[in-house]
Image 1 (cartoon, rainbow, N blue to C red):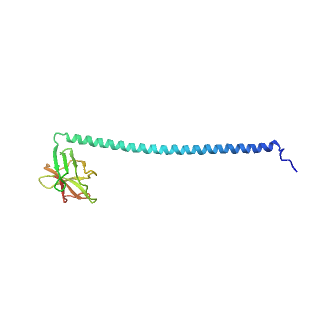
Image 2 (cartoon, rainbow, N blue to C red):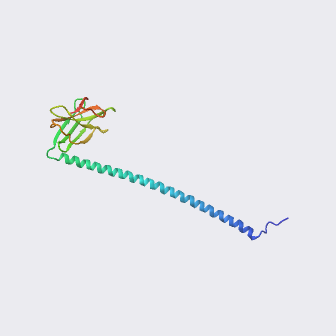
Image 3 (cartoon, one colour):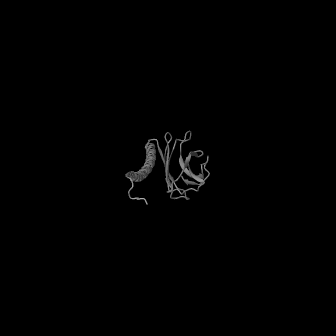
Length: 184
Protein backbone atom coordinates (compact mmCIF):
# COMPACT_ATOMS: atom_id res chain seq x y z
CA UNK A 1 0.00 0.00 0.00
CA UNK A 2 1.29 3.51 -0.81
CA UNK A 3 1.49 6.31 1.64
CA UNK A 4 -0.45 9.31 0.24
CA UNK A 5 0.43 11.69 3.03
CA UNK A 6 3.99 12.25 2.01
CA UNK A 7 3.90 13.80 -1.41
CA UNK A 8 6.77 15.78 -2.77
CA UNK A 9 6.67 19.54 -2.37
CA UNK A 10 6.66 19.97 -6.15
CA UNK A 11 3.35 18.12 -6.29
CA UNK A 12 1.73 20.54 -3.81
CA UNK A 13 3.37 23.57 -5.39
CA UNK A 14 1.61 22.82 -8.67
CA UNK A 15 -1.77 22.58 -6.98
CA UNK A 16 -1.15 25.68 -4.91
CA UNK A 17 -0.10 27.57 -8.05
CA UNK A 18 -3.23 26.38 -9.84
CA UNK A 19 -5.42 27.45 -6.89
CA UNK A 20 -3.72 30.89 -6.72
CA UNK A 21 -4.19 31.27 -10.47
CA UNK A 22 -7.89 30.39 -10.18
CA UNK A 23 -8.37 32.93 -7.35
CA UNK A 24 -6.57 35.61 -9.40
CA UNK A 25 -8.68 34.73 -12.45
CA UNK A 26 -11.90 34.94 -10.40
CA UNK A 27 -10.90 38.29 -8.89
CA UNK A 28 -9.95 39.59 -12.34
CA UNK A 29 -13.26 38.38 -13.75
CA UNK A 30 -15.20 40.16 -11.01
CA UNK A 31 -13.12 43.31 -11.58
CA UNK A 32 -13.72 43.21 -15.35
CA UNK A 33 -17.47 42.63 -14.88
CA UNK A 34 -17.66 45.54 -12.41
CA UNK A 35 -15.67 47.77 -14.73
CA UNK A 36 -17.89 46.79 -17.66
CA UNK A 37 -21.02 47.65 -15.65
CA UNK A 38 -19.49 51.00 -14.71
CA UNK A 39 -18.64 51.72 -18.37
CA UNK A 40 -22.21 50.84 -19.40
CA UNK A 41 -23.58 53.11 -16.64
CA UNK A 42 -21.33 55.99 -17.73
CA UNK A 43 -22.36 55.40 -21.36
CA UNK A 44 -26.06 55.57 -20.44
CA UNK A 45 -25.49 58.74 -18.43
CA UNK A 46 -23.57 60.27 -21.33
CA UNK A 47 -26.37 59.43 -23.79
CA UNK A 48 -28.90 60.95 -21.36
CA UNK A 49 -26.77 64.10 -21.02
CA UNK A 50 -26.46 64.43 -24.80
CA UNK A 51 -30.25 64.04 -25.18
CA UNK A 52 -30.85 66.71 -22.54
CA UNK A 53 -28.36 69.02 -24.25
CA UNK A 54 -30.10 68.56 -27.60
CA UNK A 55 -33.48 69.32 -25.99
CA UNK A 56 -31.98 72.43 -24.37
CA UNK A 57 -30.64 73.57 -27.74
CA UNK A 58 -34.09 73.09 -29.30
CA UNK A 59 -35.70 75.00 -26.44
CA UNK A 60 -33.16 77.82 -26.76
CA UNK A 61 -33.68 77.97 -30.54
CA UNK A 62 -37.45 78.08 -30.04
CA UNK A 63 -37.08 80.83 -27.42
CA UNK A 64 -34.92 82.91 -29.77
CA UNK A 65 -37.46 82.46 -32.58
CA UNK A 66 -40.29 83.52 -30.27
CA UNK A 67 -38.34 86.52 -29.05
CA UNK A 68 -37.64 87.53 -32.66
CA UNK A 69 -41.35 87.20 -33.49
CA UNK A 70 -42.32 89.29 -30.47
CA UNK A 71 -39.78 91.94 -31.42
CA UNK A 72 -41.09 92.01 -35.00
CA UNK A 73 -44.68 92.27 -33.73
CA UNK A 74 -43.78 95.10 -31.36
CA UNK A 75 -41.95 96.97 -34.07
CA UNK A 76 -45.01 96.63 -36.32
CA UNK A 77 -47.59 97.89 -33.82
CA UNK A 78 -45.48 100.93 -32.85
CA UNK A 79 -45.14 102.25 -36.41
CA UNK A 80 -46.88 105.60 -36.94
CA UNK A 81 -48.61 104.46 -40.16
CA UNK A 82 -50.18 101.38 -38.58
CA UNK A 83 -53.96 101.11 -38.83
CA UNK A 84 -55.70 99.29 -36.00
CA UNK A 85 -58.90 97.30 -36.50
CA UNK A 86 -61.09 95.72 -33.82
CA UNK A 87 -63.05 92.62 -34.79
CA UNK A 88 -66.13 91.32 -33.03
CA UNK A 89 -67.65 87.88 -33.06
CA UNK A 90 -70.74 87.25 -35.12
CA UNK A 91 -73.96 85.98 -33.48
CA UNK A 92 -72.71 82.40 -34.01
CA UNK A 93 -69.56 83.14 -31.91
CA UNK A 94 -70.48 86.13 -29.69
CA UNK A 95 -67.54 85.62 -27.29
CA UNK A 96 -64.91 85.88 -30.03
CA UNK A 97 -62.87 89.08 -30.33
CA UNK A 98 -59.98 90.06 -32.55
CA UNK A 99 -57.54 92.83 -33.21
CA UNK A 100 -55.48 93.67 -36.27
CA UNK A 101 -52.53 96.00 -36.74
CA UNK A 102 -51.95 96.64 -40.42
CA UNK A 103 -49.07 98.38 -42.16
CA UNK A 104 -49.01 98.48 -45.95
CA UNK A 105 -45.19 98.44 -45.79
CA UNK A 106 -44.52 95.99 -42.91
CA UNK A 107 -47.44 93.57 -42.86
CA UNK A 108 -50.32 92.50 -40.67
CA UNK A 109 -50.48 91.31 -37.07
CA UNK A 110 -53.67 89.43 -36.14
CA UNK A 111 -54.74 88.33 -32.68
CA UNK A 112 -58.02 86.76 -31.60
CA UNK A 113 -59.59 84.97 -28.63
CA UNK A 114 -62.76 83.00 -28.05
CA UNK A 115 -62.69 81.10 -31.32
CA UNK A 116 -64.28 77.64 -31.30
CA UNK A 117 -62.05 74.86 -32.57
CA UNK A 118 -62.83 74.08 -36.22
CA UNK A 119 -63.62 70.60 -37.47
CA UNK A 120 -60.69 68.51 -38.77
CA UNK A 121 -61.46 69.41 -42.37
CA UNK A 122 -61.76 73.17 -41.67
CA UNK A 123 -59.47 76.11 -41.00
CA UNK A 124 -59.82 79.79 -40.22
CA UNK A 125 -58.93 82.20 -43.00
CA UNK A 126 -58.27 85.93 -42.63
CA UNK A 127 -59.49 88.36 -45.30
CA UNK A 128 -58.67 92.00 -46.00
CA UNK A 129 -61.88 93.82 -46.90
CA UNK A 130 -61.60 96.47 -49.60
CA UNK A 131 -64.17 98.49 -51.51
CA UNK A 132 -64.04 95.59 -53.99
CA UNK A 133 -63.68 91.87 -53.37
CA UNK A 134 -62.04 90.56 -50.17
CA UNK A 135 -58.32 89.70 -50.45
CA UNK A 136 -56.88 86.56 -48.88
CA UNK A 137 -54.39 87.35 -46.11
CA UNK A 138 -53.81 83.74 -45.04
CA UNK A 139 -54.98 80.82 -42.94
CA UNK A 140 -54.60 80.70 -39.17
CA UNK A 141 -54.83 77.94 -36.61
CA UNK A 142 -56.50 78.55 -33.27
CA UNK A 143 -54.92 76.98 -30.21
CA UNK A 144 -56.81 74.64 -27.88
CA UNK A 145 -57.90 77.66 -25.84
CA UNK A 146 -59.44 79.33 -28.91
CA UNK A 147 -56.76 81.97 -29.28
CA UNK A 148 -54.52 82.80 -32.21
CA UNK A 149 -51.74 85.27 -32.94
CA UNK A 150 -50.29 85.40 -36.43
CA UNK A 151 -48.18 87.74 -38.50
CA UNK A 152 -48.43 88.13 -42.27
CA UNK A 153 -46.30 89.79 -44.91
CA UNK A 154 -47.76 92.85 -46.61
CA UNK A 155 -50.46 92.08 -49.17
CA UNK A 156 -49.01 93.67 -52.31
CA UNK A 157 -51.06 95.45 -54.92
CA UNK A 158 -54.29 95.71 -52.94
CA UNK A 159 -56.44 98.76 -52.34
CA UNK A 160 -56.52 100.24 -48.87
CA UNK A 161 -58.14 98.10 -46.22
CA UNK A 162 -61.59 99.11 -45.07
CA UNK A 163 -61.71 96.23 -42.62
CA UNK A 164 -60.90 92.57 -42.02
CA UNK A 165 -62.92 89.42 -41.46
CA UNK A 166 -62.24 85.87 -40.38
CA UNK A 167 -64.13 83.00 -42.00
CA UNK A 168 -64.28 79.27 -41.48
CA UNK A 169 -63.15 77.57 -44.69
CA UNK A 170 -62.16 74.12 -45.98
CA UNK A 171 -58.70 73.03 -44.79
CA UNK A 172 -55.96 74.70 -46.81
CA UNK A 173 -58.03 77.79 -47.51
CA UNK A 174 -59.85 79.08 -50.57
CA UNK A 175 -59.43 81.88 -53.11
CA UNK A 176 -62.61 83.72 -52.11
CA UNK A 177 -64.62 83.50 -48.88
CA UNK A 178 -67.23 80.74 -48.90
CA UNK A 179 -67.68 79.83 -45.24
CA UNK A 180 -69.40 81.49 -42.32
CA UNK A 181 -67.90 84.72 -40.97
CA UNK A 182 -66.72 84.35 -37.36
CA UNK A 183 -65.11 87.78 -36.82
CA UNK A 184 -65.69 91.11 -38.59
